Length: 262
Image 1 (cartoon, rainbow, N blue to C red):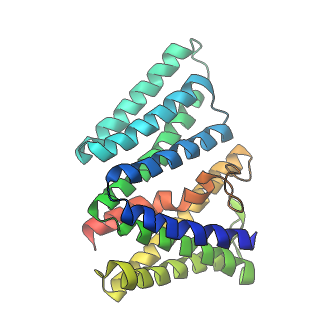
Image 2: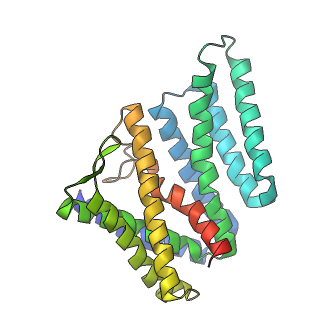
């Protein structure tokens, strides 16, 4: 398991850097997000046994949201969310005449749209502000996740949130914080060059904190759904949703930081 995590990271991070920094047209980054979003949504829907028309509608809405966040004004975001609810509730009304369990039918579909493509879409805004922010974000998240795993395995004793994720420890959470902070400083020195050391340290720590929260939120959903991993696509990591859970939360928070703090 350990070597698989390292091999995947050593392959994926340089590829992501080359992909984002060298393929400049926004279309290529959008394509990457679309693929990740569709697979992650499909995994989420499988976890909650969403099938048929509602599953298809949710995935199409996710694609539409990412397209809108790429090519339309950011001011239209509330309208896009409202339209998503109108479409989903209308499809449930048309597709199934029995009103029983209508809330249960709509809720996981709408939640997946908000949870995955909407949160991923903030990376489009980040990339538009500067492609270097994307490898910075993912590098900090990867360092947070990795240090949390290894520190937790090595010295973790006190459980962090046993009801949601029995294997996560307080020491692992501290490792996530330190990993994000160290990565923030190093990536700023090697890639960004626009933050002070103190600011890059704080930004990395915030990414580390939000990475933990994102990881725990996905664990909460998996525990509720009764599954260990969202999928099996990535050896040693589970599914796509398992791999992007931290960055789903860290991406919007980091975007807000770059707009108002950095």
